[in-house]
Image (tube, rainbow, N blue to C red; front, side, top):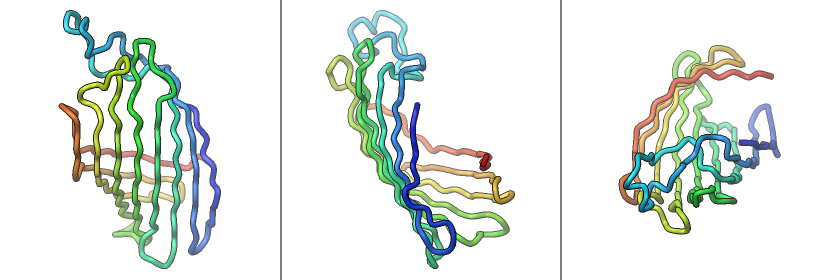
Length: 190
């Protein structure tokens, strides 16, 4: 993925706001499908319904707006849209994805150096297509919630524990749904 992110507004101190816009192009560099897993010939050979890549080019656009005030939480809203520009050599075109997220980060620590972060995301995924036909088990609506505890080790280093949970979903066919957990270490490089 090749992308650019631009800060349009950046008020660093005291009450203020930050506004970002971004765009990216995803290129087909990972291993992708070698056969249409829903095609007639797929029943006669071993095949996969999961690939690391999609074998096509897509773009994404996004924005992010954060407001910091005397309110106990820093509030944010972000959007993301991803759409395929081409289809793969074997006729695969992933469905478009649009998302809207609401964010809240507590400005004062919950306890020593630990800050809670809550995010709610609404996401729409349009169905994938194989050779122009809608793929089974694709297309969905999701409402997910995730929470994080951010431990600030220093000004530029933090450890983050996060958990995400699907609150509501409307999915087509047999798709995976999961609770996710993550532990990450973040640092500012400059």
